[in-house]
Structures are given as structure tokens and as C-alpha cells.
Length: 93
Image (cartoon, rainbow, N blue to C red; front, side, top):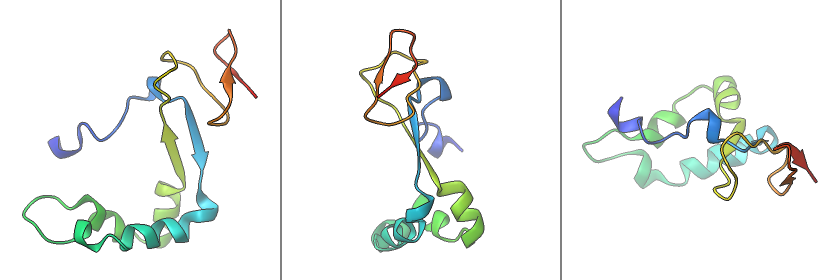
């Protein structure tokens, strides 16, 4: 578990999320194309584990991507990555 402790950002700093389900086949193919990161070595191979997830579960787990815009204060939520926050902290186009 220690391997993954720094792999994620806390929810309060996430500024927006993007639905990528329509690109899930391309996303999986892209992961598979990095075979040297999916196999070999002595450590935990995260990419290899991800590629073994069955299709429907993979779509559920990897169908959304979360991002943090470092130029925004914690707690700001955007509905689109290119939106600008209003003074209230909510998203505006």
C-alpha cells in the first residue's frame, strides 16, 4: 500500500473531472502500448495490474479522470478544465 500513497491527490484539491468513457478503448490500448512499464522488474507493476482488470470494471474505474489546477485555491470546482472560477469559487465559462 505504501507504493500508492503518493499516487493520488486528496479530493479537496481536485478542481475538475473529465468523462473519458468514449475514449476507453484508446486509453486501454495506450496503456498496453507501454509494455515495458507493464511487465518486468522486481517491484509492483501498476500498469500491468490495471490492464488485467475486466472490461466493464475497467470502464467504470478509468472512465473518469480527475485533475488539479495548481493555480486555484483548494475547494474550487470547475465544470470544464478551461473554465475560470468566479469569485464564489464556482465554475464559469
